[in-house]
Image 1 (cartoon, rainbow, N blue to C red):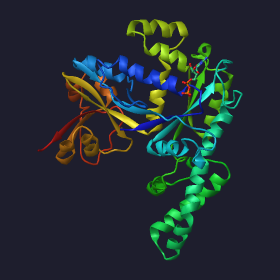
Image 2: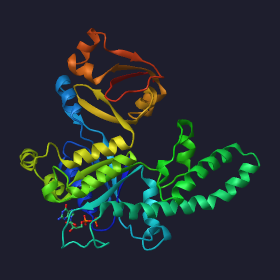
Image 3: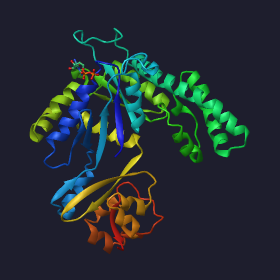
Image 4: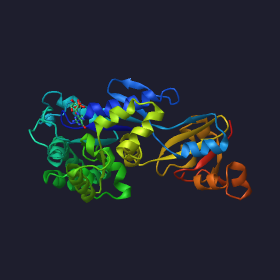
Length: 364
Ligand code: GDP
């Protein structure tokens, strides 16, 4: 599955947030398949209001959301890139995730020590990212000599990589993450193969005080502004409030959210932001037994999308009966959509769209 790493300085609320995420999942375990793979790895259901709409129309007995994995990556300290403390292990964990959520302390509390002695989320983000940039810089500088040698002997792949490295290195030396490099679509694969820490998409999570759960505060406003300038995503939540919401029974939850002025739990916003950040989209299978959401990467074609359900579906793929979500809802289901000519028969080149209701035809 797709993994989002939770990263930040000590005492910013990472564990509180991670526990809230997994407790929500645990509370829903009766309905939603959920597992804790390791103490610091948890799968959470991706909330999607379309699921219940579809299930109501089809009279499905069960709703099965798709899932996203969060990893609590503790152990960041200044000097991590130098292998200090748990530094190496920390960097290795980051290398394994597909995206990074930076948790930034945006709450004041004299009882909880801030490692840098003051509340400054943007400076904290920089401290964390500097360690990753230093690690990337060192790894590229180590590789560049060998690449130059291969490029001189006309190795095409080496030339391509060297070209990328020569664009990324000045950025890193200038204190900027590799993700800010301008990468053409056809260079994307080679860029990803560099396996850099700072090329992963990031999400800034402002952990605000309990009173600012609905509105954010002055600290989180600065984070939002900075994220926007970078073209990154930011979410303001109160981890402490979220951990309280997470353990409430469903009926009390709604009341509590209203009292706080929240439309939905902050975690829902966080999970959805992570999902988008990873470039993921959802398609649905709908029937009387269950309505189920499936995750694919944006741009996935129908046979590979079918393969997410079962490899036989991909191997024997014939076609996908496709109804757009909006048509399915407006025309009140498959029969109505068919009658209105809104069920399309799509072949192996079809790029599945977010919200498609699919029925795969395949041969064994
Ligand atoms: P981590 O080291 O980043 O994993 O941080 P923790 O989740 O262990 O949190 C450190 C301390 O900050 C704990 O005592 C939390 O209860 C507290 N904390 C976390 N979020 C909030 C918050 O929103 N408000 C306040 N006042 N304290 C919080």
